[in-house]
Length: 167
Image (cartoon, rainbow, N blue to C red; front, side, top):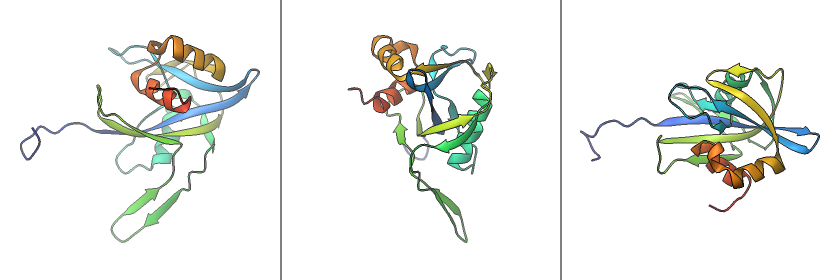
């Protein structure tokens, strides 16, 4: 039931990173395992919720740092970032690598994925994340196609888009 007396549903806004680097076998992507009590330990991309009035890119950088120990040094797509500062509000506008919205599932959310490069020392364990692994793109594609349940539901959707795999 929608309307005035309907229960307020939680809605999340997220910033997520597809961290890329060149490895011995070509492009590699960093994935991690979620380490929260009661949640499956599936592979996912680093990222998480925006804090109130936090900029999208600020949240992206914060989440990457908290979960991996790495510092975002470059955005790999042209984000055309601009903040408009008005009398009543500041509004951040940008172009992420891609956007997602859950239309069915366990969490009602919308989020922004950014392809990035990082530097620093990868932590063994971050904020509710661990088991970080760099996967060569070819290995990642093969694993996604043969073992999709190794990845959380959101990462499955993101990988299908990123790898341009049919739904």
